[in-house]
Image (cartoon, rainbow, N blue to C red; front, side):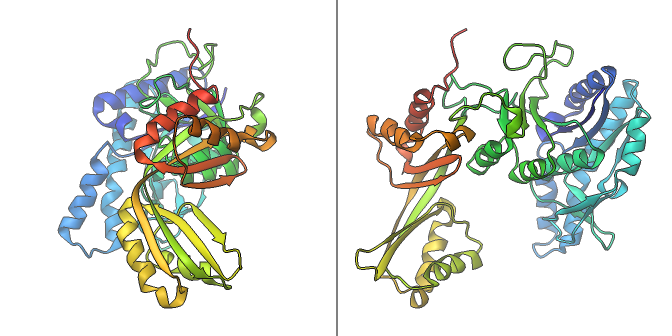
Length: 421
């Protein structure tokens, strides 16, 4: 017997029929003797609708009332899920975030979980009940409903799993696991049976949309094993792992120690819409970087890749960085406005770049991964504009027109293509 928290995203609960499909997965786990708790998102599109209603009511609304309205989407889904489970013969009850309770700070619209009292959930699960919990929400110290920001249901699920001491947290979505790259770009992309928390965190931050960054960070901090799997698999079918053996379908996100054979490279990611900005002839003095990036931070502009080159005489430096295409004009204006504090000779930039990254914990113990990446791209005639590295990642900025070619070339180069069966 295992204790499992299962989470269903918006597409998995978009209609009552899909809620029944999701509930069938819960029933399978209960009939296998497992203790189960469920965390649900709002039905697909419902949160956007609620947000639009709030903005229509008043563009300058009270954030506390925003949360009261927007949190209602998950409450509808939780109630419907509990009704369907009960109709299937499984004792169930819905819980709003404040009923658990899931305690948060008072940052309405982007609250962070500060603690969960698992007493009631633990009692229900031990008695064979299935609690259905609203994701994305909690209760502030002053007793008001709060929401956790977009993607908060994943974070709710991981937090609940940590609080009740779950053996794993199953994230049901519209894909059947984490792939070596986007299968729409590389049809021969493989579904990974396991991936480390660190690799998943890098891939999520680099553009992979399977899991939200905050939920992976929390899972890593609390050692909560995650399984990414598809709601649309047949609940009555035999449980087959990615390697074809009996086991849990999907991809297990776990501690690196659980992975016996670590691939040098586990995945290739692509992030489009990257704009490049270069400041040339910046006076090289203490605090200059703080002046540049402090001004951008004050405008809530997210900076990604950063490269700095010192001149031969040490008197000036060039600073190059990337921002989202949508923030390019705002970033240029911000830097120009701070020219008196930064003291640069000239400013240049361009939109339409693509960031390609290779990720893998095996890179820690293998030399030459970066150089082989550069060679693979050079062989395809692809010019590299920027390079950044970390312990388990190497990223390059290239022209967007070569993005998919680069992904396919690197995927094949590192042996990630699916083998013919």
